[in-house]
Length: 260
Image (cartoon, rainbow, N blue to C red; front, side, top):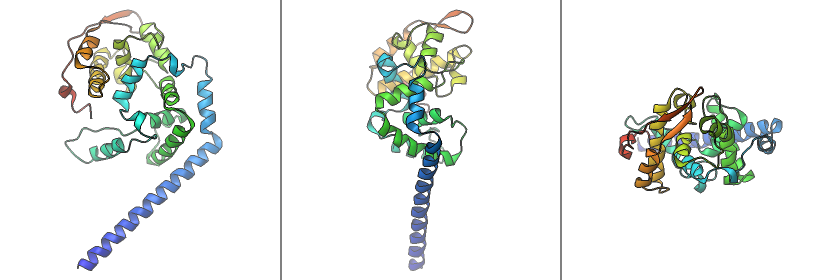
């Protein structure tokens, strides 16, 4: 019996290794095929040459901290793939008490947006991982972050940080206040649920999650988070300028499930 189980375990491990090897080979092959038509370097260059593209140095550093904190806290420590985040996301699909989470890094999300692969299936995930690692070799972290902020959807028809900053607040990406920056940082995850024209209360709730993430990542103190959230928010809702109201910042554990 022991011999049988040993044989079975060996067979399963061999099958798993073969499957992983095939997946890596196929992902590389698919990425090569896509790049033969749309080379990553050319796709990046075409975005950076667009009128209105905002380079990294013209984007609010506080917005950078907010985006990284809430979207990919290990952005500056990984090579395109957050293995810890992927593992956590996988576990969350099977462990009932874990909050469901995505494992895509900012680099992966950038690749997805560059190629418009928003509704692609599981096959694309491997290709996305390979292209994310290639993007990390092609561009600096700062360049990737600038690409990301220039191509993501901020709701209400605004694509990119220049449109969102001007459309919602009438400012440039460098002129964003800390409150404005943390509101914008929460929108891209699900823009239709957080766009300011018709979901301002939800956007303010998400802002609290952003601020709590920044506190957790030691970008700001709890007291600073309270002060930022208390700032009056005047925004354009598509037809008129409106001032939002603060009801006080919730404690971090209030959003424990959403912070996962």
